[in-house]
Image (cartoon, rainbow, N blue to C red; front, top):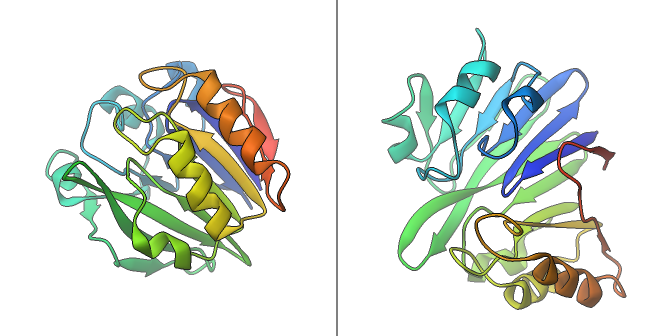
Length: 205
């Protein structure tokens, strides 16, 4: 399985000739060069999806999932509420999770591919349900402007104890590299490996 970070909260997951995009917003248009099987959008804000990028990656057969506010804006997008899930024929399962920051509701995503589960938290504060999440890989915000802070993220990841943790939402619109480094320094001595990704550089997860 391969993961590419485009900056901010934008990612691409590739596995078995399948492509999933998460919050396609950041980075250069040329980086979005692979047609999507699935696009997951966590929130109806300018820094979570970009119509020009969607036009590059959406093809016949692409599924788009997001909260109702996103579905009203994007033709063909299926509206999800926290707790909704869908299973694909290839065994991939998608479940929407709660994501709340200062009263603004969005979604996170639990993405199960084979025996591995990725938790993409979205823009959120720490929430009680997170301590019960079972995930191999956690992508979690650390910026602290419209999301939890790095210290909040540390506490959440210490409860989930994933194999890999990836800080998100820093270095662009919110947060700094210092936030990501603080997160790495606190988590690295534990069971969990922290990956600080470089934009448009693919890594195996």
